[in-house]
Amino acid sequence: MTSSSHAMTDRGHRPMPILIETDLCDDVDDAGAIAVAHALADRGLVEILGIGINTSGHWSHSAARVLNDYYGRAEIPVGIRHPITDGIGPEDYARAISRMHPHAATPDVMPDAVAVLREALAGADDGTVTVVSIGYFGNLVALLDTPADALSALSGRELVATKVARAVVMGGVFGTRARPHLGAEPLAETNFAHEPGHTARFLAEWPSPVDFVGWETAADVITGRTLSATQGDDSPVAIAYSLHSGKGNGRPSWDLLAVMLAAGELDGRVALSGPGTVSLDEAAGTLWAPSASGRHRYAVTVVGPEELSGLIDDHLGRPPLAGAWGSIRQETELDVWR
Image (cartoon, rainbow, N blue to C red; front, side):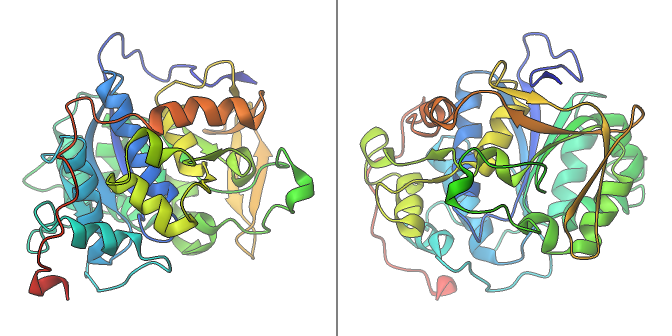
């Protein structure tokens, strides 16, 4: 195994350019991961080039904009998978924080996520971008299939091969959780199983090295319990966690750990396997084949879940460096949000 901060590219002292691909819909750890990314950006460790929403519900797009605005980065482009729908997740935190902040949510401006990804990559230096995938793979597969256009003379596949140094993916199951008495690992992890055709294509065709955060890696790393105390009850991050999981309960840190791993902040706490190849079985379960020429690795924790929780919570709970926008404004709901 190798250290989690093993560099795929030498970024020196410059912030690492990252693109985030998220569903921001079914589980609140997506919102937590975006919060952690902003905390890392506040520390000068990453630069968020853009966010792609790989579900089609417009509430997820507006929720990402709300989170960006809360952290003082409203300019970060957010794209969404088209065609756009009115779909919501089962706990509906995305719609809730969007309705609380209509000043940040812009339902009339929702660019296609693939176009946002292409533009961000086209403007980046070669071999510098880390893609953090914490959802489904439809946008990334569609990106590979794009032809050259006005943004870049490169096809999507060529653009990824030229610009992307590494991808970090939350997905799959590669081992046993830290506390097996709490339940068995799923036979098929959600991000892999949601659209298995897209997953299989990503695993087979994505040209950059890929490091995977399996379900077992963070299932017992609970974070977000203290958000109301550290950020305040009016924080959209705290509200999202309370609506999803109940105030003070927290949630496993799958997506948050992936962002921290991508930024190289888990050195000595999370290691990476040797190289190999990940694929799917017929039930969307994870298959792992060690191979010296493989482009894939998976994360293995080397410290207990409490230590990881503390480190991740330190970032999740940090208030925005530039100061938040202030208390929630219970504004009149816009007709477009009805």
